[in-house]
Length: 365
View 1 (cartoon, one colour):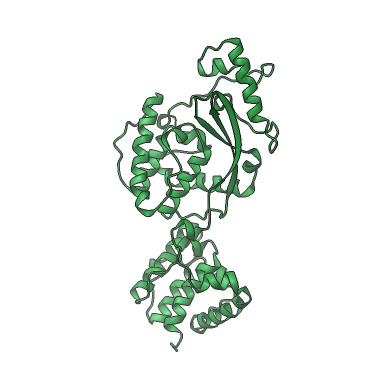
View 2 (spheres, rainbow, N blue to C red):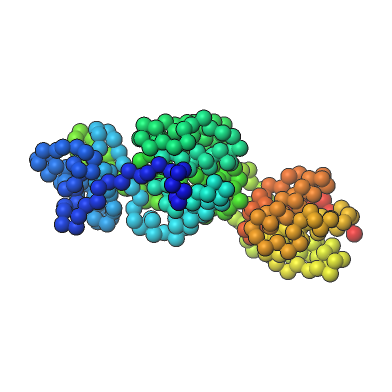
């Protein structure tokens, strides 16, 4: 994050020199004085926990992640998962979304763990999304102050999400501890709840190394954390329809449905010397949807109400959203699809929208 006044300085552990052992500077890092034997024992425990058969020595566990109290645990994403393209895409999409939301605050997030752990960015993000002001100190540099701010922010988040059945897979300690998995769970939930104009990659999972201290010894294991499922499931839309069945069980009939819908829309768009050949792409900017609604309802749509040649994602979303409003005015139910899904070339969403029009206007000349 580039805006210094809005972010508390990160508390970074003392950097180890190359000629020092892996856990040799634990005492200096956390300000604890350990006897030589205690440090030696801790080093050995750390090595045993890190050198796992599934991920030999490559898992980057920081020293503070092995200095645990009894029954305390740390979670670290396995490097192989960090390199997964879908995981990288998820992180990038969320970072870009946060920066778009907070552009007027002159806040730039570059790394989720380092920029969100103290609660400052999360506070601004929630205030912007929910259009409400939180009663918290603007800048907090102490750990206690940061955790108090996080507590207030997360309580506000929980008030919004809990009624909708979201599993709260984060806490003050996990966020402040820079647990990237917890931070991602939180951001995905916020993006879905506020219907962010983004498309999250589906079915993103990561392997996580869990280090836990029991009876004075460190124990480690691997678990799989599911960060995203499908857009519909994350939106809480569990009811299935004919298009779910079509895509899952009868993909061979998809071409027949598309051909019928293309014939239907061209029957009307041809009046404006327009023709559709690809449903998912030619309706993605919303222009044809708006024009089609005008033709079906027999009125002229003033050009200043939509973008005739949209050149940005937001303008395309505006067009599709406007077309949805025209559908509601025409007596149709609110489309199940999101405008963002249509803009993002989601074929199932586009087919749902067009099929709604087809069922009402198929006999219209």
